[in-house]
Image (cartoon, rainbow, N blue to C red; front, side):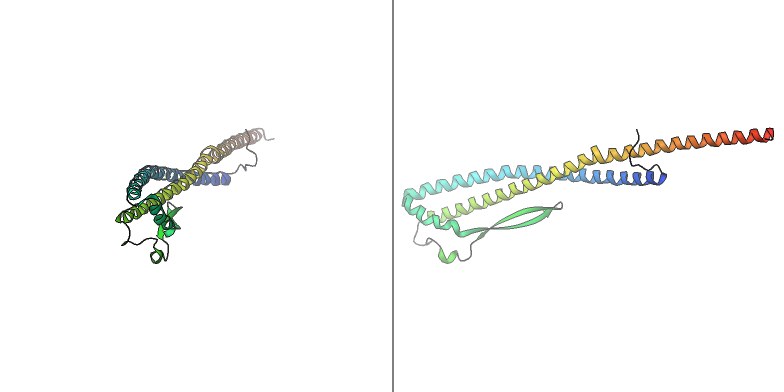
Length: 215
């Protein structure tokens, strides 16, 4: 079957073979990247499982500490002292590069000036509140780490899907198309060569006949 728009020349054949080498090399590199991304993704999936367990443990510890403090001081007192402390942290967002991919980085930072407006005194209140404050910090840190890991998994999964589509395009469309064109040109060149040989043979036969007959 004729390939439309294909020039049947040895130069075109040479160019197509070079293009095939480049496409195959690109496929190999993308396949390597796909494997690395898949391994990195699985690593973060396992990490998320551990971080979720940490969050659940931290929340359970915080709940137990709150129950104890409320029994000693009363629910309204404990909640009144701790609610304002919710604003003492802020999340700083940045990014880092992994395998050439921009990965989100989340960092928990204490709000500027918080220590000057601490909602409770470490001296005048129960040491139980100090314990609760520490457990609140543990929960927040665990939650931020979990959020960062989940965002990383989302980014890696998106990149992995993109790489898979490129590999599939090369394997199913680009490379087969180049191979078909190479095969077509090689076949046509062989046919043309046979036709040339046949014509030359006929010319040689005619010349020999004329030489013998003197015509």
